[in-house]
Length: 82
Image (cartoon, rainbow, N blue to C red; front, side, top):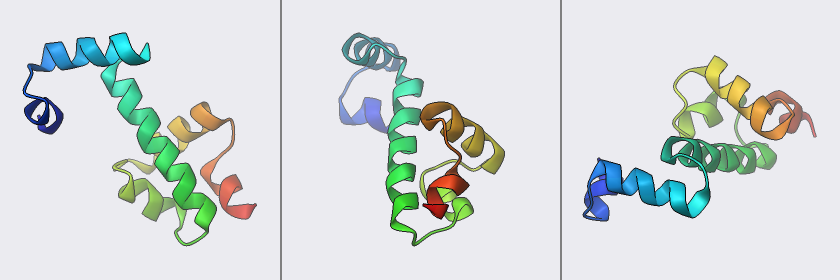
């Protein structure tokens, strides 16, 4: 609701505009942004995988790990080891 309130438009209009601008659904776009932030946080080496998962809004660590691997073809733990 936050985004639609901020842009003063209905959910359906917002989702349609995001899809038109990005080529992916709003949910997919938001997931990609969150995963990109997770990558940045992991590269700092300051946080463990669970902390990064929670910091980026992934409350299910398994889902976070699967999504991260699918997006970057590397696991979050492998990024930490580099």
